[in-house]
Image (cartoon, rainbow, N blue to C red; front, side, top):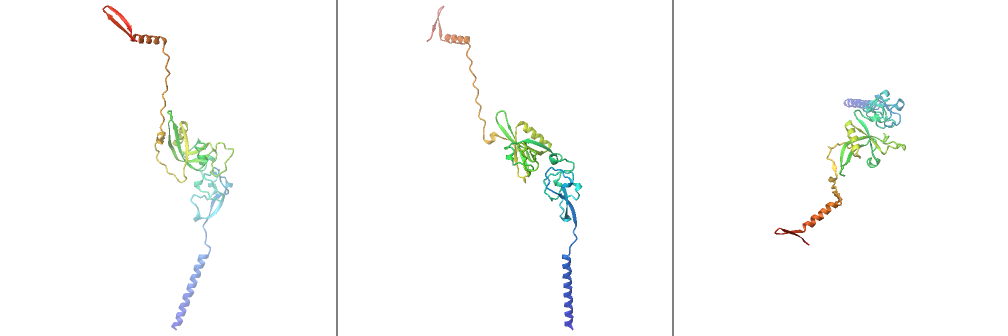
Length: 280
């Protein structure tokens, strides 16, 4: 009888374990309800500065848990805004990659509130051989040559963003052969005070752009200007001009000769008589 009860208890335990295992299996393999949401994405590649229209957009379905910060759920929130960062087809649009609504398109859309865009002339040397592109960051050096021939260089701006090179806003775009300003003009994003410094520097001397690492955002305290003497180069003394000697006046020359002649005459007095003798 005791053995019969043990078998019954064992059978009940086995059936309970089997039922629990089956319930866990069904619970874990059953399809779960997903919290889906539609987000706005680019229908095709969008170039920097382009004002977005409705046909530039499409909707993608994502899990709400995968929704990136700053994404848009309605196309009306994006239409008429300009692209501030190039985007690829299918890429989800984020608020940080778009200019504010009504800020215009092209270059004006890239100018942040409170900032100014200033163009400066550059060449192959001052433009770092064309390696400066839209989106890169530069320092600006100013060199002035003084009236005595000496010169000094100082850093007037640091970590300034280049928003255009010539008329090009997108660094990945192909060069426009008709764009004759590409190798001569760089447009920098600066504050009002920095814009004034830059314009004055162009008027008083020569500027040079210095390319920075994209990850280097350190701004150092401005050091003293570097002059030629700091490089161990001293300005050689200028020779004094030789003044031409004017020809003596004939009358003055005769008087000088007479005075020289009188200087060699000896007067001898004997009583009330005076005689003169010339020394040889």
